[in-house]
Length: 211
Image: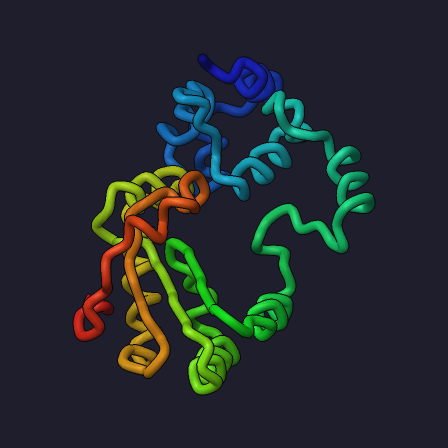
């Protein structure tokens, strides 16, 4: 069923699908898919915020099951220490602080996690955990899998998603072969099937991981 809320907001804005696509850095077909909403598909979270901002609407105006901004803020004050609407606004040092608390297992499941592969503090932390006997497992998306291709479409970057993963694996090269550190590739949609990821991974050949 089409998202009539989104369709109406686009019409009211006076913007064309092509103009919206250009401003968000995605294809026109991607915007059309958001409106068509087949299988209840919606934009990747950061595009939801960008689209709502562009159309000058609240998320709840475009997607009926979303909370309003005030409701989200109130929920954050009532139940959470701090609320971040998406990863891009999370302070970089917070990730390191959280990872440093791992004492029994250090498991990370991402598609690319490219920002981590460029962080020397993250590399040092991995080495320290492995040295202390904490098993480290890093699982990245399989660049050749259909789930990665779909994620690229959802984010509006297409094949660039697979390239990001390959680049991240190349960056992680110095950690390959390090005792206590294991790299794997997964082929499931992380956001929808986190409970299945561990059961549906394959070992990443260390010598070829960056290829």
